[in-house]
Amino acid sequence: MSLYNNDGLETLSFKVERVYMKNYKIEIANEISNDIEEKMRKDLVEYEASHGIDVNYKAFSLVLEDERDNIVGVLNAFTAFAEIYIDDIWVDKHYRGKGYGSKLIQELENRFKGKGFNNINLCTSAFQAPEFYKKCGFKVEFVRVNKKNPKLTKTFFVKYFDDEIQAQGTISKS
Figure 1 (tube, rainbow, N blue to C red):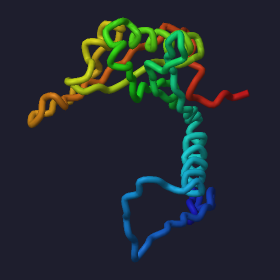
Figure 2 (figure 1 turned 30 degrees about the vertical axis):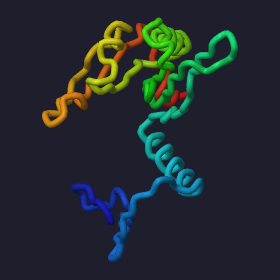
Figure 3 (figure 1 turned 45 degrees about the vertical axis):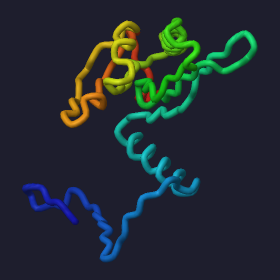
């Protein structure tokens, strides 16, 4: 394909290649191979980098243990772009209501405060712990009401860091 300016001179030349499939199938997979995962990751990173964005994806867990090294709580989360997403939080039923969930949240905040992240966010169902997250300082972003089963109404929460600089999620131009 060529583009021409008003003088009729060619100014830019490039080829657009599109790939179409006549036959295809879509399957559901419980897992994908490491090769497919790597191919997908590399392509996504390349695309996001072309926009000056760093995916910055890192999954991690905070593990709470008692004095005998018994695991009594876990917070699963991941970083992506400039945010920390809480995926799951669990406290053993014998330790619930004693402040350990709050301690896990506080530890998460302490570990990421001042590191250039914008916020921590999560989603919880009505039957789970929306009031707990409010007590931890999270603000409701929006609610997705489930009219057929209100217990499954989703509340989306966010808690912003006060950091002046948001260094995560972008590719520095050095």
